[in-house]
Length: 247
Image (cartoon, rainbow, N blue to C red; front, side, top):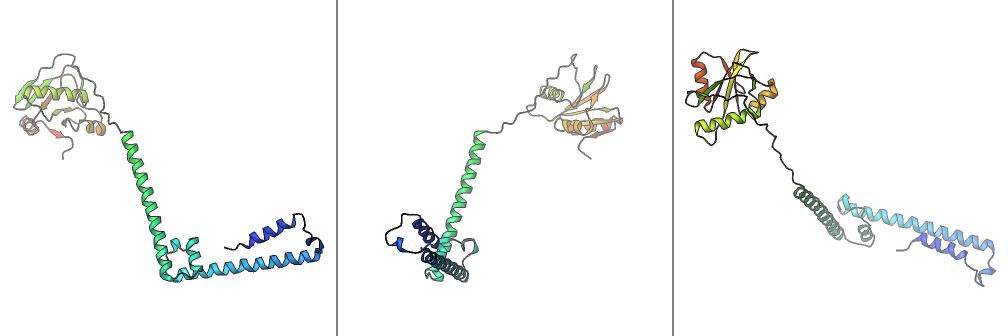
């Protein structure tokens, strides 16, 4: 395509070269006139190109081409060179499809990189360390009824301590000869006078909500693998009780 600016630049470069024989005969006035004519011509050509481009854009808009590709240089060139509306729309659709493929490919590449990073650096879940509970003296468990036992404390014990919960769970497994077991532990809460029942699964929640629950020297602690049997026992002895997490 003709570029007026290149014409002007080339003419000015020629003026800096060694003048040819016939050019030496030109007067400065003639040279000024020539330059003025070339600039005028270039301005006219630039203006004409701008008009052609505007008309091409109008044709593109009237053809119903989506705005996303309406300013594509190749599409403008086709509109300037007599492409039909159908041809313009067809080319615009091919441009849109090409961009969509590029976007999908970029998204797929990004997803693949994320998955590769996830496999390369797997997140390790580490179980919290539980300190083993060791009673100061041997604890004697007395069987009260099926699935329910009790013992008298000779030292202060945190009932909500994970190590103590694990100790009681392993003890009940042996006493009840069971592999899988759910543990209920109850002791009187000196602050309220109510015997509080916690489960192995809710002890940490109780501790977080209310602080640690202790059995003090001389307290009677009930442990059970059967929650219903434990509440029936407490009811039969007139012991006011509450199970944490239940109304």
